[in-house]
Length: 440
Image (cartoon, rainbow, N blue to C red; front, side, top):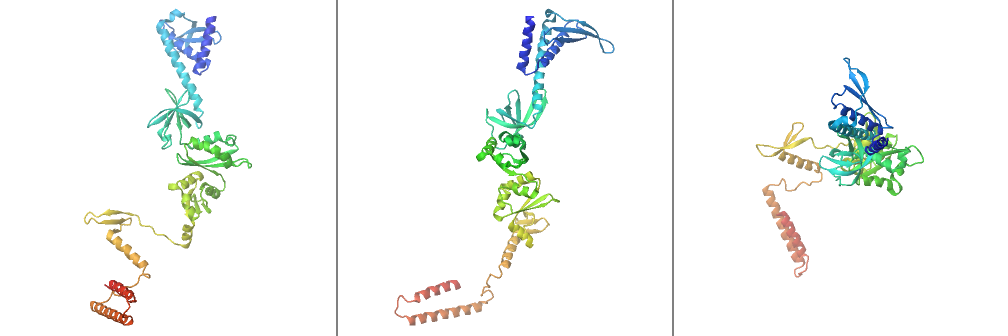
């Protein structure tokens, strides 16, 4: 009796150690005994092993199989310990271990199968160019390269939060695939830091993310006494700062959600100040008018702010400045360069512009066209050169007249001040030299 008590306690301890139930362990024990029984010589066609969980008494019920495949002629065929033999004992051990491993895998899979969309914390064990392994305790999670944030370097033995994307059942156990780029990670992190979101008072209506750079979320409050943006930010930004630190410094914009599409688009473009939003429902577009000095801020670096706003709101966002809108209303059209490309002529070696409409313009013709366009545009401001149409004889006569005029001026200056060294004659001479140089 004491041996049965010890075996009962051993079964309970083994079940607790492996994390499985006692019934599952007893079923594995019965399967192992069936396999060991069939290795006996003169064993019956089929056998059923019955184990009493209270007394741990084991009973073998043997059956024969008739022509129809039914189990018939049940009888007690419980062997003694010495009758099983060494081979049967090895078979029992192998089958027992296999059944226990399968039970562990099933338990782990059931534990994480319903946790897709949840957040887990793991320790980085291994990292290479293909994936990173996270130790979650009893199991390991796989963080593929495609689900990692660009330029984020996993440090060994560092703790990391990740979002469960998929749980697969494999022959080696459950394979848990996690992500650091999924927008759901943002929602789960805010649920951990903001009690109002966990309680359902504040909701995250939409989320748009460019991992590693910037994230925009739209929040809504089901209680008019609770400010959704202030609840997410926290006192002195304490709550949102925890999320930013977990995301390694990724910037987060929190905007209030609005059922008014125009108002929602305007707030989604924060921090830019929007003057007007025109919704075109047929085209699924939102035309946004901003002050001239806010245009670059509304578009963002490489169009990031406008791109995130479009994802957040679900509208195609077209941003225009006040000047561009005024020009369109006035009918002013800014002609851009035609589509085409520069190609080198293989015969002449000169570069040629091949337009999309089939027109070909050489580089020299292009330059002449630009110069002519400059002259035409500034024709009112350009003075006509006086000597442009003069003949050589007329030019020589004009030069003689200019020389005679200069001599008369010099004579008049000598008569006016013949003995003065500091007279105005030097100024006139300087002026005469300048005119001569210009004329020459």
